[in-house]
Image (cartoon, rainbow, N blue to C red; front, top):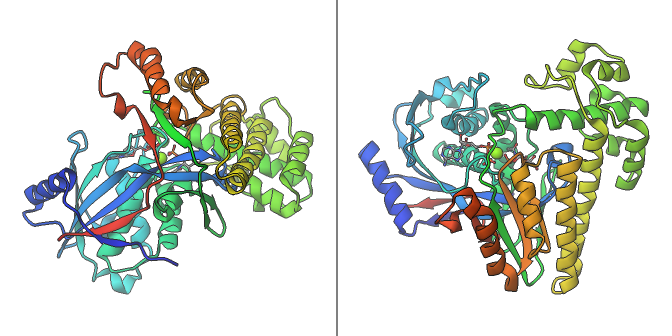
Length: 459
Ligand code: ADP
Ligand code: NG1
Ligand code: MG
């Protein structure tokens, strides 16, 4: 169990700027700083919440906090981006009230803080100090690069350090995966795990229950380029994300019921596989036999499970999916089992063939297949993402949407000799027609694996 690393802060333009902002607001210097990176997922999309392994790497883009403690129990949050207004609260009174609108920025911070406060016993709560924080973020927002989890995780790390709790990286990853759910999405834990467990220079195979991470050395000559489609979706603002979580859960439960298992004990497709002790290929055959292609209405699911609407609401659905009446179970489950296989093959290829050109071709092919499946079976792409994927075929070995989708970014695998041509091709054929005339490096950029979360102390 590893502790989060603590380093000495080096002075850069950015650290000077955030320190000055902090001084301006609180009239004192920050006591410590927190950095948590965003991530790009190379392969394994929408399967973490089904219990399957994924392969992300940490980004250079991050959430950076300047933090000071207070002797009262106040929480004061500021943001260097003026569109995010300052927020004032007290530690005794953390509530994340979600109505039907898009969550507020500070509610992501509150998720992390609430998660950490829940680990503090009642008799210790009176000793806690308040916090004043300035947030500075460079992760593109609502674009599948996990700005949300970087913010939640940064808040949790700041609180853990401030309250002297010394939570380990694994504990923080688990805690943040759970507490980000206070924002309303039932995510699977990939983003928070890579945020804490990443090492510079390698991607990671992240597996769950128990949380494990294995280094994935990417083949020599592999270059990864992220391209922003200029469309966004805040995942907690609509039911799209939870709808997919629930479709997978219902698929798992219908298969379980047909196989004579207690369906109420099954939450994820990975749970049925474990309970039946089958391999992924067997699961694909079983899924095709147990589920049908036409969508299921809520009534159809109730009949399949021989249950009631209220039990289904309680056991299987989320508050924002209870009113839905069309669930595609076969398509979603087939995506999940095949994507889980692609992750295994991706990892195996990186292990076996570290230098060969054929490895790059295999990885690219797996990424392209992943995108096709997300577009056609999982229906979480966007026409702008599909357009980039089509244009990218000319220069890349494989391109796919990354993160939850419905907008956001693509990740491409290519060889170094094609990088500049690819970027120029997208600038000319994608970005310029959409009105982008400069600052192209903010929408299309190379990425290499960076390290995970850490704390910095001032000099
Ligand atoms: P992502 O794909 O980036 O994780 P989400 O939709 O899950 O997208 O979360 C995006 C939300 O996270 C933003 O709408 C905002 O509320 C919050 N957020 C992310 N980065 C910042 C930041 N730098 N400052 C304030 N809030 C941020
Ligand atoms: P993004 O798009 O970064 O919000 C989400 C989930 C992940 C994972 C991916 C899809 C959260 C915090 N993140 O990421 O767990 O399911 O979608 O693979 O819910
Ligand atoms: Mg997110």
